[in-house]
Amino acid sequence: TGQPDYAQIMITYTPDKYVVESKSMKLYLESYRDTGVFHEHLAVDIAKDFIAFVQPLSLSVLVSFNARGGISISADYHWDR
Image (cartoon, rainbow, N blue to C red; front, side, top):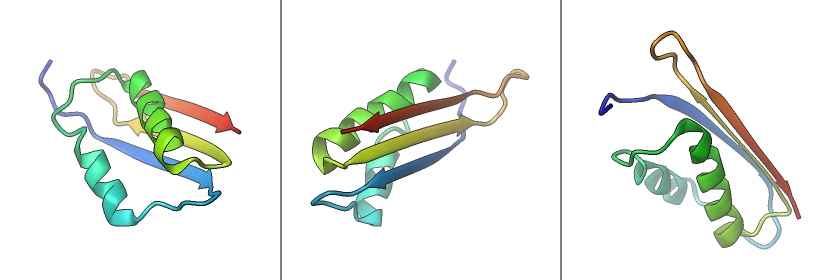
């Protein structure tokens, strides 16, 4: 629709060899700023990238979008090695 969406994104992980630098994470998340993606897919997309590059032992990604049109959406993705 071209309307902005706002969300809280919570990423919880158990590191193995690598940890994520906060500035790198901020820049990565900003790459989604002008990308059209379904709310439910965002959690999966972030998780798959995180798994590929950070290789954590476990991961949880929760995205909670503000209400729009009277509906608020939260999507959750869990993964364990």
